[in-house]
Length: 393
Image (cartoon, helix red, strand yellow):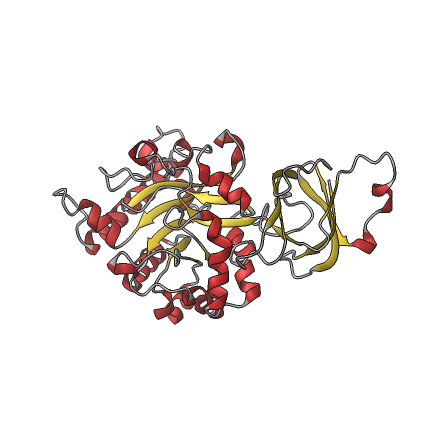
């Protein structure tokens, strides 16, 4: 396929007001100004499918960096809710890919919003919730949609684990217990790693084998933390064990910006469109993302779907811009920044030769409410078109 005459925002530092993208084998093969587009591609007999994007904004596919789409299904109640294993506070061996249902209506909503990939995983009821996966948003078989799995290990601090276990007569019922249980689990996992390094032929322990990618720095902890003290506890533990980490939600991050700047962990901010229905989110605001980004902290914006709807992700970024984030940083917060934080920027997040041809074509800036998604492409295939009767492809 050949996309022509688009206003290309590449997220690579160079844009094209009248540009082209050539796609081959699901990847971006070439990109540049229309004056550089090979003319033989337009000759009679050429097999190139032409998508004329004149008057439209062409972006890398939008990325949701933290959500529960397909694992908390819409309109299905308990039968479709597989987000939290509420009976055991330490469940690192759970895998999101075993519960994500691509038939969830939210996947179609994502495609209509130009969202081409998402980080999906367990909720925050447990101290350790399990393994997230980074997936494309189009398909019927989750195994064919995976970009990276496992992609992160979910851990949670503060109100959610406390509330879930406080009435069960078991730990954790305090923030101290949450931190202690996580430290104990990480210590046991580190001991398992050390033993396995000394004896590679030892029997595999399913409980701790899943921690090895975390301990070797291949994937991060994905830390649910809203309140400032919970955020700093997460930082403290990650530093103790020398782990990578993303700070998910980070609702009071703007109150401790210097500390977070020094810590060096990225933040995934939101869902600021949701109500302040818990004590720990009383200070959440759209200004947080812009303030963190302004302090040099790599920042993405999230809907935390279904807490707020995934299709409103671009609007959430727009509201962050309205609250002070720069328009460029707002766009980066749902494209390349999200890709970097999720550890998949080698494949998605920007328009660059060699990357997956995940592309969204908009009538204007997607952070503005009246903008329409014209086309969504994943791996070079049109998976959503606003022109239902279009037969030019």
